[in-house]
Image (cartoon, rainbow, N blue to C red; front, side, top):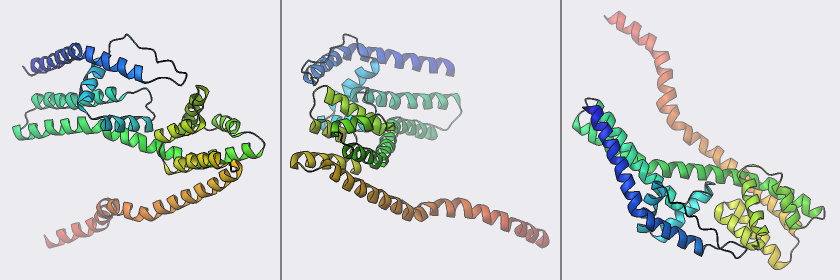
Length: 297
């Protein structure tokens, strides 16, 4: 009986998903076409419109995006870009988040039905599954974006040093930037290659730098973009400004390392008190307590 109920729930969920896809597909295709018409490439031609039907996840996300504000969608797009998920749209992310918010409670419900559990605990587990299904994609996206931005921030001083060497050796800033992009790896290298691709498509240097700042808004990238824009606007030597910027970034990274070192004793306090000290007390006091109990008995 329990197995039949689980199969029925799975078939019902799949049928509901298909109905939602059929009902929301025209609206999702229309929204996708309007967005592609509005988003022109740097060359001036509109992006190609795809005739493929959106997936059920994208259709569900488009329905949720229609009820969300534009500011909320902009925040989702910014977090996706910060995490390096360039090919994932905000609608697809919202659809995945809604799907996990439904799938995990259904899985919890199946586990509850297969076991003899109290009704109160069953409700708590299903509610916890719904919360985890809705919050887990957001937490994973935030963690991925934070780690990626930290890697970009750590790699900026080396990039500035490469630019200083290239500019002072007689290369222009664009040539030095292309040479540095071939040597820098990781998220920072991806951002540089994307920025150079935008410039090759017709974007100005300032626009490409501002787009890079939007994708990876860190203190180091912000200082780098501000320095380059000020140097081009005021006509100051880029090499001297890059050298000053490299020194500033290294001082900032040193201050960040000192800040983390000062926070280490506070962070280690919880595992020290609740994990290490009890284990030490058990090892040291358990023999004495056992001997004392034997002598008293």
